Length: 151
Image (tube, rainbow, N blue to C red; front, side, top):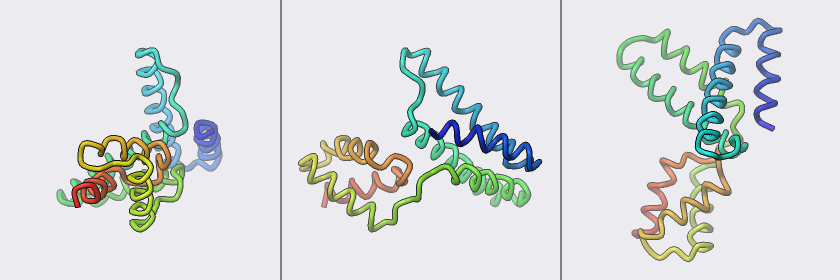
């Protein structure tokens, strides 16, 4: 399970005295625990591995936005720190799909759902999220689905 991998990596980082990796993984664990607490408060079970992948992608996206802001503000040391965190978190995501693979997956999802227009976009995205959580950037995929359904 993904949680076990992260917890084992925390122990390894402690032994190796890798402060950046250790602090990043502790932050990941904290985010996961907070999400579990939120889910429990809503009467839901703890997050599944697929949910965790989405959470990790969200964390990476936040850091990418921070990198842009730090670069614009001339704060290279902070941008470098965020990039290191992105590298640590990315290690727990499956290999990302290429644009061609995403297009093929979108075509298959459209065929599977029988989507005919923009009103069916939610169905297509739902199928993609179920099958490819953590493997594709759904922000970019959303635009591609929209183009495929409107064109």
